[in-house]
Image 1 (cartoon, rainbow, N blue to C red):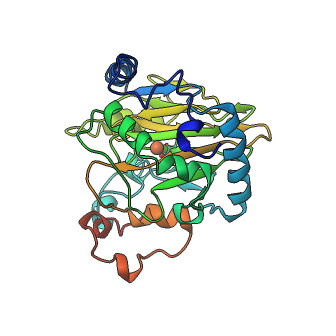
Image 2 (tube, rainbow, N blue to C red):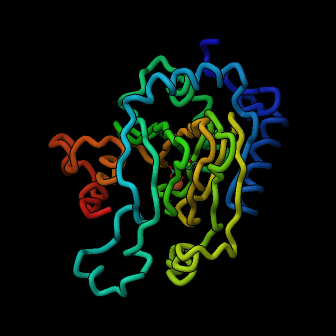
Length: 290
Ligand SMILES: O=C(O)CCC(=O)C(=O)O
Ligand SMILES: [Fe+2]
C-alpha cells in the first residue's frame, strides 16, 4: 500500500471518478449537506489497513509534538489593539479563554514519505475537496508549519472553543479515543456582518442551547464551516489517544500565516523568521496576543 489512492475507500467514496455519475452524486450530496448543516462527515473514508500505518507513523512522531498554551481565545488572535480590548467589559468573548489541552505536530516535522503526507500531497484528494467545497480552484497551503498538522490529545485532552481562520476546515480522524473527545459546534453562530458576541458569550458560559455534537470514528473525513461556527473538542476520556489531522487548503496560492497560531503549534519562537517577514499582510496583522 504505497499509493495514496489505495488509502481511501474508493468503493464507498469514488473521489477519483468525479466526472462519472457516482462521483457527481457524491459531490452533490456533500454540497447539499454542507449547505443544510454546515458540516459533512464521511465515515470510513480511510481504509482500516491505511489507518494502521497512519497511526503507527503518528505514534512515532508524537514525541516531537508541542503543547502550546493551556487556554486560548475563541479568536486565536484578538482582532484588536490592547487599547481596544481594555475598553471592553471583563467577560467580553474577545477577552475570554477556555481550556486547551493538546499537542500538535507541525508540518515540517512530518516526513514526506508518511501516509498522511502522501495523502495530503495527492492531487486526487485536492481535486475532490475543490469540487466538494465548490471552489473554482483549491491549493494546498504553502505554510511550512500549518499546512498539515497532527494533533495529539491524551486523557483529558481538549481544544478550546474557537473559530477557524479558513472558511472550511478539513479534518481526518486517525484514531478515536475510547470515550469523550466529541467535536462540538454551534452552526453559523456568526456572520460576516455580525460577530454575535451575546450568543458566543452564552456558549462560553456553558449554555448548551444550539450546541451540536458529532461523534467521530477513526478514518472519518470531516468538512466543516469553521470560520462562522464556534467549535471545540470536548475532553477525551480513557487512555487511547485522539489523533486528528488538520489539512489546510487555500483558494489562492501561497499562505497567510497567523504567526501566533504557528508558534502555538511549533513552540519555536514568538516572532516570524526574517524570511517570512512581510510575506503577507495577514502575517503582519497577526503579531498580537493569542
Ligand atoms: O480535532 C478536531 O476534530 C478539530 C480541530 C480543529 O477544530 C482545529 O484544529 O481548528
Ligand atoms: Fe477548528
